[in-house]
Amino acid sequence: MKARITFHDLSNYELGIFWAIGSCVREEDAVTFKDRRKYFVEKMESITDSNMYERTTSKNKTQYVLKSYIFDIDSFLKNGWTERKAQIRNVPYLDDYKDFLRAYIELHSSMDYSIRYSRNKKRKWKALRLKIYGNWQLIDSINSILNANVGVTSKTPQKTANETTKVLNYTSLKEIESIFNWLTDSKEYHGEYWDLVDFNLRNPKKIRKESNNN
Image 1 (cartoon, rainbow, N blue to C red):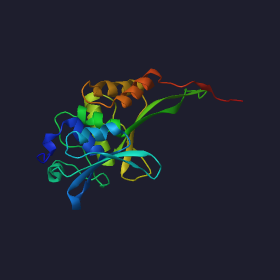
Image 2 (cartoon, rainbow, N blue to C red):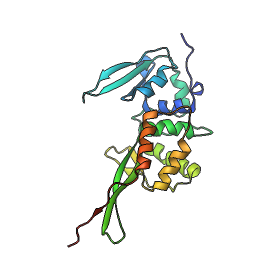
Image 3 (tube, rainbow, N blue to C red):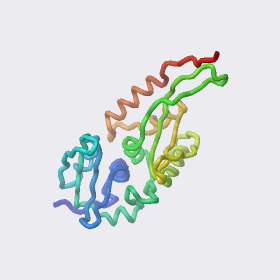
Image 4 (cartoon, one colour):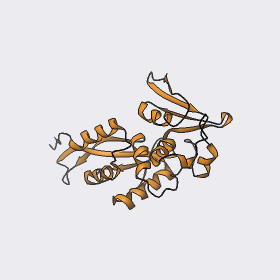
């Protein structure tokens, strides 16, 4: 059996996955990882002595699950980790957040197209938007980290239906490109996510529509 895995045994990228989808089963001294994307659960499986399995969710979607008893939970708690549904969650203290945020953003972000208008309101179109989700405190920290390391403007986190969850919205194509350029790495990354990023960055706008002004 492998030795107990501590906070310091994980790479920053693996810590990003742990923070994003790790859950503690205290009564069993176990940690579980669940996600519909096999890649992230496989990453955690590779450092444990457990095997992941598939389950079907209530929405009839396939979800991958890993349950491991090898993590030293107290080590993660001492370094700032809290349960996913905790009222306050934050990033751990790290010297460099690039790898951590690459994993977290791959798991807890989305890209869509929001409506934009010309100054005189005569033209409207849809343009790319990056949204990053998380606990309000964690989102505040990500906001500050991206501002300090990438140079993007500090945002006002927006509310969601869940009162403890906030979202950062980036609508400037230049800022979105800057964030992804900073996060780019050739070692640890989710290929499908970055394929979608590349596609969206090549198609930053949808067809413009003329508004009706009769």
